[in-house]
Amino acid sequence: MDPDALDKVFRQRPALHRFPGSMGRRVQALCQAVVKDYGGDAGAVWREARDGDDLAARIKRLPGFGEMKVKILVAILAKKFGVKPAGWEKHAANWHTVADVDSEATMAEARQVKRDMRGVRPDRALPGRAPRGGRPPSEKAAKLKH
Image (cartoon, rainbow, N blue to C red; front, side, top):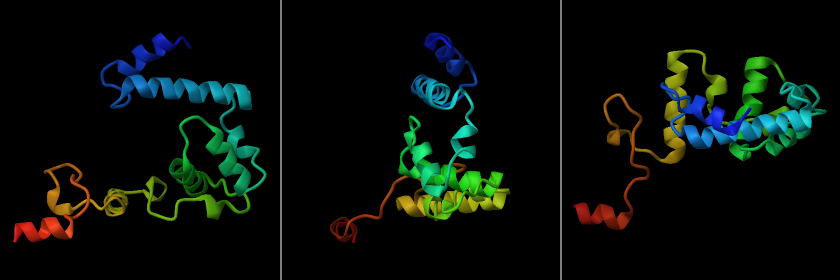
């Protein structure tokens, strides 16, 4: 697809992503890699994987997939789609992710785990939004407040 045409699609309201321009380019790069390396068959990424190591390596070679996204996608493939080549467990996220979400309650748990991992303070939350504000103050900053 023409990059300019795809960019227009991503920017239509409602936008497909909060950063439509950069995400449009990422999606195009990912699609090009799937066409080049897997004959346009995205499912071949996991169907043809020999084992968990190969699955993780195949995903990591895709544009835009670093360690965290690889772990999350391996977990999603296993937990939601039954894709479990030998050894997949060591490449799956060992924290609560979207792969574990099946209700509003488990979505809330996943969000809390993410906040905890980032050190976000619940007391800094805005109504109806995820908390902002990162880590607790340093010892020095805490002493200045008292």
